[in-house]
Length: 336
Image (cartoon, rainbow, N blue to C red; front, side, top):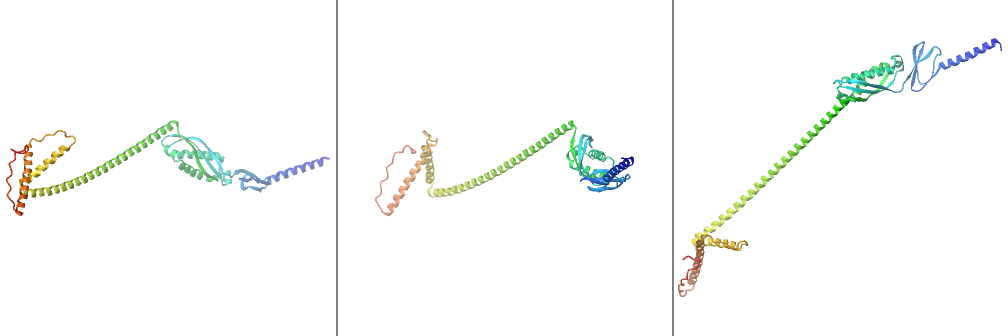
């Protein structure tokens, strides 16, 4: 092959290579979830969407490849001083998504580093304005404040912050021990309060029960007194009626009736003493002569009753006069 033919062959090969390179530069395939920026002589012109795209070779080139999927930003741990001068170690995680590839590529340099520093600074600002108790108990409020602040700051970068979550809040060890003692004291305090309230309720219930018992006892005593008074009243009425009957009998019978009633009572008393199982020997009262007189009165009443009956019989049918009764010797139970 001559020199001319060799030169033509080299030119042909070079032309094919250049054509292949130009073809590859003109046709670009963007994967799903990504967007590429296009620069013409170093200036941004447009964004290539996922799929098949065409560019002007040599004049245009790909500027930045931006991931448009939701991404996770791990915020490293840092020491934060709270409002009450307590030091806590805090780390967090943020979820974000690029919504404007041009802004993410040209409005900020080192996007991930910028977002990390922004999150660290705002965590210190938000938690530094709160007391330790609020920091430990109000995580949701801290997350919401961080989300609002960081999302507002990254809007200019074409970033949408979706969530910000605090992972760990670690106070110092001595603070943890102090909090444990405080919690224990608080629980003991509540237990003592509940115990005191229970004791108070028990005392109140007991006092109410005693009060009700005393009221019922007083009502019972009042009812018993009323019944006793009623019984005494009825007994007094019966005694009054009996007294009237006795008085009428005495008015009609004289001293003999009195002796009769007294003798009847003495006999009943003697009968009761004699019929008792425990009474083997008993003594008559000192005034035994009174008893004898009473019995004599009973005998006199008996004789008068007999004479009255005989007189009524003689008035109905006259008969021979009866001889006077012989004088009898005085008995051992009669007066001499």
